Image 1 (spheres, rainbow, N blue to C red):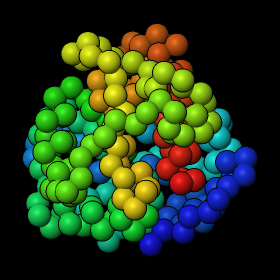
Image 2: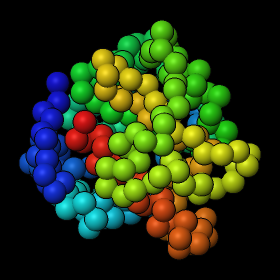
Image 3: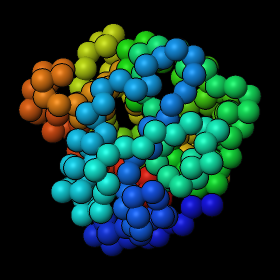
Image 4: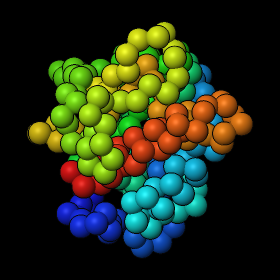
Length: 218
C-alpha cells in the first residue's frame, strides 16, 4: 500500500501527502472514547523540526489529524497516538487500523498517564491473536540513528516503573511500537510546558528520531 524505499544517509522518498511530494509529516490519530488525543499541541511541530535537522529528512511544518474512517489515512505512513484517558475503537475502526498496519503503515503509541489500560484493551481488538512483546535492547529501533544501549530513556516518572518499549509484529515487520512508563513525546513539548531539563528533552528528541527513522526504513 505504501511505497517504501531503502535509504542512504536518511534521505527519504515518501508518498504524496497534502504537503506535496516527498514531504514527511506525523499524522496524529483522533480517536473516540473521551481521551485527550489532542494534548500538547507543540510536540509534533517540534519533533518535525528536530527530525529535519538531525536526519536530513524533508519535513512539513505541522502535523495532520486523521480519523481511522478518513480516506486520507493511507496518505500517511506514520501514525501517532497519545492521551491521558479512555480510548475507544469501534469494530470497524479496529478492522481499518489492522488493514492500515498490515499494508505498510506504522503506529507509534506513547503512554501518557492514564492511557495504558485502554490502549492495551483496544489494540487487542486490532490484533486479537497477538500480544505486545517487549523489544530487546539490541533491537535496531534503539540503534538506527542514535545509540540507546539500555533501551528507552526515562522522561517522566509516572508510576516509577522502568520504561518499556513494546511492539506488535506482522509477518516479521514491527507495525506497532508502544512506549510505556516514560512518555517520550512529552519531552518534545515546548520547554515551559513540562519544564523538563535539557538533557531529558534531548534524550526524548533522539529517541523520537530513532522511532521515525526506523519506521520509514523497515
